[in-house]
Image (cartoon, rainbow, N blue to C red; front, side, top):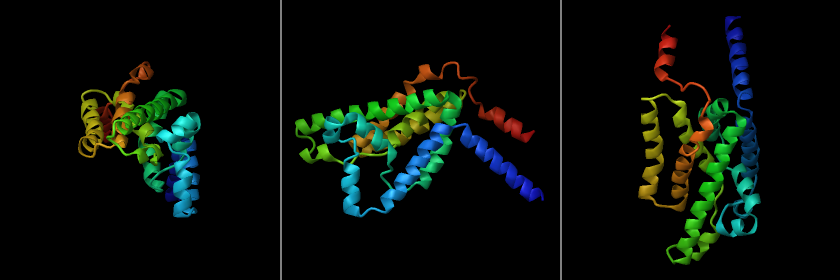
Length: 221
């Protein structure tokens, strides 16, 4: 009986957590269905289908608003579960803290601005001969820019001095690929981190920063 009661309490707690971050879990639900759809496509059809929803130079020049929205509804890896975990750890926490509208503003800023700036840099590289002409049609979809921006803005959720190791970890995670691979996607990810950090005005007045030390003390009783 105790196990049943504990299970029910766990379900109620999980349901309350999901309700507290509606935008996160609606988005995650959309990603679940689009990922299922991808698994039912042939490889050739899938590539062409995603390319039309990609934020590459060609599509941005034709339908910028459409592709900026639709590109955020698909996962390029085709694996949903890792994103379910990442959304729960980062997006849900940010939405619960900032509120849905402010959280969405951070997501949109990181996704849109990082996409446009990185694709503009790629366009310059193509024009100058530093990137092939075929790069204008590259496949570029996914939700990683928004995720990087949210990970960065959560820096302000953590009280000093714990804030600084977290910030160092986020910056290192995205700076190392940029320094080693130097792709335009890596550049976009690093831009997203900077954009997330630049969203500081949105976090003002959102309550006391979380102190891990206080949480540990409370758990110990």
